[in-house]
Length: 404
Image 1 (cartoon, rainbow, N blue to C red):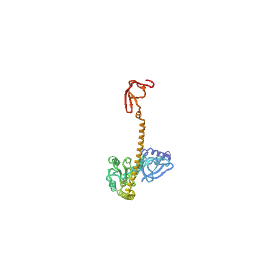
Image 2: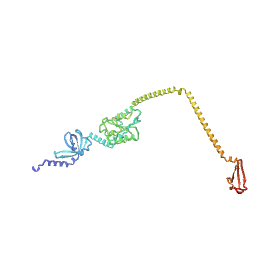
Image 3: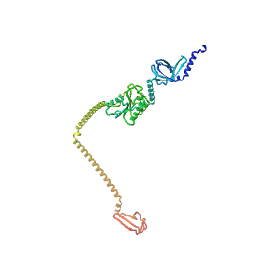
Image 4: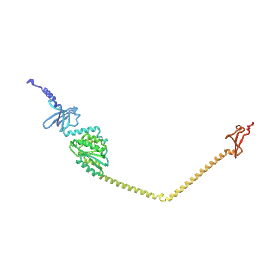
């Protein structure tokens, strides 16, 4: 018996080796409810128990894995833990060394939707500066939803009652199940490329998290963000938020609310227009009264009541100005005449004809005037100009001063 006796430590080591050597225990997924949750602040490790109706399993998650969790574990939460089974020698118990914790069933869908939301938010898909304003008076609204659901009836009824001038176009989409994402994205592309509208409403009525799952996909978010037409997301009830809501330009709590956001209220518009019309009437009447008072004021003035006197005054002023202008013109003509006469007298005094009339003459040879006798010789033809005519002659003899 003594040869078969094992220490506690040895036995624990053997059991641990057996468990660690079992391949199917090295990677397991265990579902259950969290209890005895304890976060160790000093080390950052997480300790908890996973239980169901028939058993309990001790679990630990080290800090290196805990910081990567996409959910915040809490007591009572139904989860699926993945990891490996091993033995902790210090107290001789087997436990789950967890490397991930995700919600079980519906919880997993919430977790996945939250993961997608955080990813898209980090990419800037939900940025406020990308949001487009809704048109104030849309001519045409595109609706992407089930053709037979209550949502489309609510949208049509409210939109047409609020703003009858607006046209609605319904793109029949599948709003849940495997085909939903494809048809929803197709509706957005249709209203952007084939049938242009002023605003798009995309959504459905309330439903479970499974029903709303198509609206929690990256495909929907990217399609909504890429739309050149403003998009209103109207998915589920007031408490339901989807990825589509965050990506849309405007989020409506319900399809009915979306119809209200997309259309102005005709009755309210009528009241506003009536108020504006009354204000305009008051202002026009006030302006008419002011202009009438001005007319009466000017009618009583001398300028209008005795216009004949005004004309006479202007005529006298014109005569005075005309007289001054005539005197000025006479003075100018007088000065010009004197200047002309002075210039004429100066020209006459300097005229060669006047010199010729005194008995002088000038002689030309070959068409050029000559001033000295040395320029001539016997036989030259000359032209002598006198005050009353010309003499054509031939030189018989040239006499220079002191010589012949």
